[in-house]
Image (tube, rainbow, N blue to C red; front, side, top):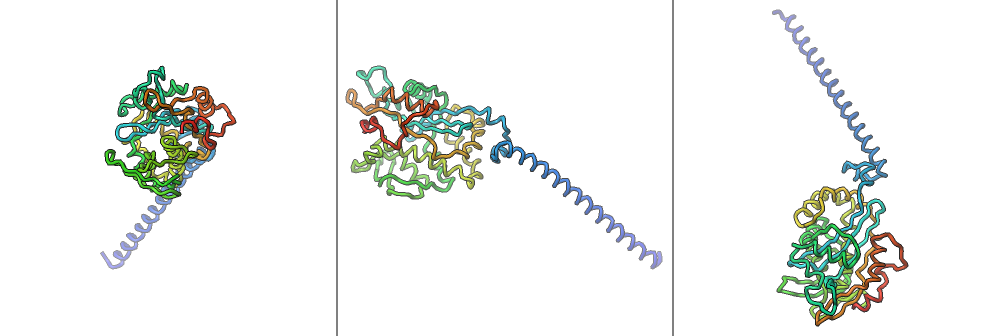
Length: 344
């Protein structure tokens, strides 16, 4: 092969390389255009879904459409907080994703659920049905008898879940009503909190929800609600505050952790996959509009035992307002009721 032939061969090889480069660029450009088209189509579909869902992009991410919300029923559930094998927290909660109305009604643990007050015994207290969480159905049945509701679902929440949730969202800012100073070595419970707005971690939140009175016997103010009444009010306010701070956009990425937390520390007769469908709508709730009250009634000593006796007429009025969409002139717990005064 001559020198001229070698030169032509090199030119041909370079030409082939140039052609191959152009083909690769052309193929790469086609792929890039196809990707853009696919993304554009997907983006358009997603944008249409968001538009159909009135801007609820989270619902679109969850794969919802306009029919999803229509098929979501109003939730009514009994939430019980568990610590040291007992339940000192019983709150009936409701949420309607269509109207965004939510309500909470605290039920005192000492509520009398017997047939005759004259024969009252310790086993006639509401929390006697708890049995370390093994018989929540009995608790629901008793609360339905007291309130006239038809609750079917329960959620048992270990205080560990509350602690972990607060830590996941990196603390919760809350206005502690009073200085809290209480020690109970038998329960490994040590409560030391100062009054005022502050950021609480998981351990401090647990202290807050379990506080009733100080070592010296002092407790919440008369106006706020003493002993258990103050604790129930604090619990309701804390739940609202945690909800408000949990549903912030910055915590969307933590949804997976929160759902895992619920599976580990929450016992319920509800389906978690069904509960997940409510998440995109809960994030839009105005927490400040959540109605919160306590079962109306008064505390009395029956046969040497403290009980809470609910007022049947006022109970019906409160239940109608909170859970049956019946209006009332009563503005809730912002104004202390006569029965709450008597109960203190």
